[in-house]
Amino acid sequence: MKYFLFFWLGLVSLAVQAQDPTDSIPGDPGALSVYSTQDLQFGAFSTGASGGSVTISPTGVRSVTGTVTALDLGFSYNQAEFEIAAPLGVTITVMNGSNVSLTGSNGGSMTLALGGSSPASPFINTTPSPSRTTVGIGGTLTVGSAAANPPGTYSGVFYVTFNQE
Image (cartoon, rainbow, N blue to C red):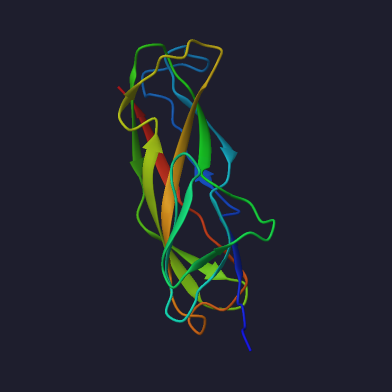
C-alpha cells in the first residue's frame, strides 16, 4: 500500500520596503519605487522518506532534490515578482535578506533561502517611465521528512532590498 503525503506551500505574505533617497522630495522623478506583484509559491510536493529541497528559479522553473517529489495537483508554483519604477539608465542592485523559517499550519517548519534574480543583479534599468521593469526572485526550500514537516500550508515573510545607484 502506498501513501502520499503532499504539501502546498506558498509564501502568502511578502514585505517590501522602499525608501525614497534622503535628498528627494515627494514625487521626485529620481526616486526608486517597488511594487510587489506576485508571491513566491512552491506548489504541492511530497517529502518522500527523508526530504530534500524544492527550488523555484527566478523565471519560475521548479526543481526538486533528494526524495522530494513534485506533484501536479493544481496548486500554483512561481517566482516572486516585483515591478520597479526607476530612472532610465540607473544601476539597480537586488539584495536578499536572511534565510527565513516558514511555519506550518499543522506544525513543523522549513527554511527558505532566497535565490537569484531575473534580470541578474546588478542590472541597468532600460525601461522608460511610466513603464516598469519586472524582477523575478526565486528561492530554495529545505524540506525535512514527513515527521518533521507534516502536510499543510507553510508561510512566512522575507525581505528584499532594491538599491538604486
